[in-house]
Amino acid sequence: MTDSAATASRAGSSSRTVADLQRASAQRLALNPLLNSESGWRSLTARLPRLSGPFPPEPGDGTQLADRIGKLVAACGDQADDAEALADALDHVTRDPGLALPLRTVADWLTARTLLSDAELDELKGLLEEVPDHQATAAAQACLPFLAADLPPHCTGTWPTTLHLLRRNMLPTGLPPLLAFLEHLAAARPAQESALHAWAGKKAEVWGLTDELHACRASAAEFVLPERSPSRVMFVLLPDGLQKDTYTLRMWHREGARAKPALRDEDTQAVSHTELRPTVAQRLRQWVQETSEAVLDDLCVEFWLPLPLINEPVWDWCAEATQAAHPARTVLIRSLDRLQLPTIQSAWRARWESLMQASEEAETPDRDVATSVPDDGESDRGTTAPRRTQDPVILKSPPSDKEGRLQFLDALRSGAPAILWHRLDCSAAFQSAALRLIGAGPLQELPDRISALRADHRRSTSADDAVTDITLLWDDPTHTLPTLHSLVAPSEARVL
Image (cartoon, rainbow, N blue to C red; front, side, top):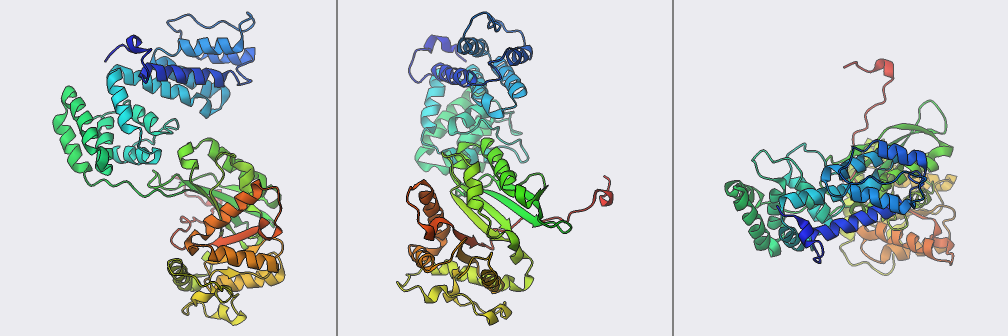
């Protein structure tokens, strides 16, 4: 509970970090064209409460935009409530939720300085410097009560998450969420256990919460950080039963391991074939803009497609939507038609297990036998034991051609979980490139190898037609769709 003004010049102090955030916010706001207009400025300031300090000048008095924005941020930078008010006003006026995120972190800093001394904040920050962002998120979710509100969007890293927990309501046990958070981290990170326990123990003693802390420590002892899993975005395109070349687009996303809720469902939308590309790109772009960088660092995009769309250039759709700094790590194609074939489920799972086992065994140099296309008669043996030598299947023609479509359906009906083809020409050069890709490492890493190949090709100036449009269908039976509820006409819906 100290006044940080006395330590403002000290390196590493909380006040200096607040000043850095304020400067960064002012620079970003000065680039917004709406705030550079008189109407936008008046709309923003009209939503702010009267501040204790001097109010920034109005437009038209000769003051530069950057100076006016800087004065406004400084006027709102002494009190957490003022910083939150400015952030709320920016959200309302600009309709850009990301613009005010640094100000919300400033508000958390200002609140933290009323609860902890600068020395305590610096010590805590030093203890948490080596904690990865995803581990901090997992520990924060574990310490909060069931059905608690999600962490807000500005909690993009370990330290912003820590500051935010200082402002959360007390847990039902009476323990502040920050101390519960540190106990969970201590249990999961043995190397820092004693230091985290010591810091939390000192604060619990000051706040008269020693018994509550020890109870939390006992309950958190079994906490284990979940393995990090890719954030998963799923686009499902269901054929419309009434209109040709019209599809129902559904989107789910999961933001890493043990996210709450585990899988979010976005609005369902009817889309014509010609509008699929821009609609998917717009949805993915919006999700990327609203998602933290820690989530985007490990991103997998899945396209669940019916047979008429199985050869669409979904890689290009993603390239248009994701930022250069955060490209989709993996783009997968999944088959909707496979889910409509209940008789092949056992063969599908058996061949998947065989594929995963093969990835652990030494591969022979000659892979021609291991990638044969199934015979026409094999489609009638959906429940027979699969032959490992069939996987992955390499098509001799793209599935948009008649011959390639028959090959694709035969492979699907025989339960093949992995199918490779070239979108335009499954030439001999492509066949050789596909064989090299399959034999280059464990089969379970094949999607990553293909993703890296396509990303490198996109950055390269030399064209290689054999790999430009290489495509992989990768159907993992352990990661399938959520339950797809039947669409019901509004007149038939039950009124609650």
